[in-house]
Image (cartoon, rainbow, N blue to C red; front, side, top):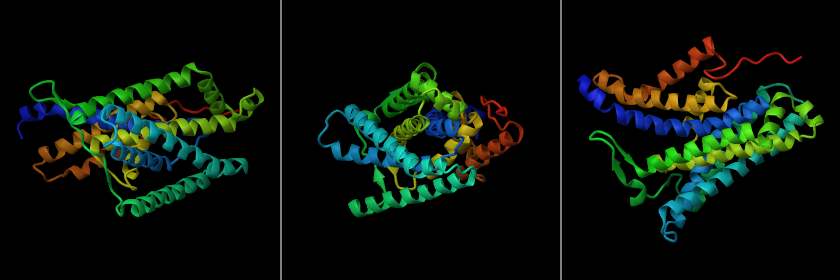
Length: 322
């Protein structure tokens, strides 16, 4: 493969990596928000993302014959998926994590195992519902000409309308979340609970309420990411959240778990690395190394960061509380 061809396809590879990176970033924000407030890795967040993807697909394809405007239909799907995923995340916190927290259990393995159990439960629940409803587990996002419309940027680079929508919605949600955390009373309350929940409660802040809202916001972002993922890649199923969830967690660690800009940066970096490896590895090795080996590089970088910079790119070392 000549170097000219590799350079010519680079803009398209970078664009695909950017789109995937924004999806990872929005999922990673759910991990990083919960960890920032509770110090908890909520591995059930991958299934919250999955529920958003499936919900959005069901709304999209059932309203498609009745709603003529595809952009309005997509907005309805995103809003519904955000509400359902946010509500699911709140229910998980209320029914599973809060009882453990109130018992004063300091063993970090207990909520971790709980999260894994919730993940399996949600996977099987969605599989049961979809199987009884449609007699199949896979749900496809219908294709519409408006979203598939292509704009030619250069001779070698084009972009679809759905890609523009993914970038626009992702940026708006990510910037909006950063402003919410840094400029609003709710954001100040989140930061206060994250720093010291007991002292925050003495100042009139209800930690349980703030934690519940944190799960709501993180879950809603996961639902939006699920719809955007479905629009980009068409097919979703009850197990679609596993790999994106693991990769998004990797992105959160790379950027600095607990840091919102870090989650954004980590997601985009991982998306670029994964896409570039998936395209260039087969080309540079004449097909001897296939696309399936792309994950090696992402997880290798994760291991290196855990060894030499465990706080991530934008994360900070935690000091001991006295």
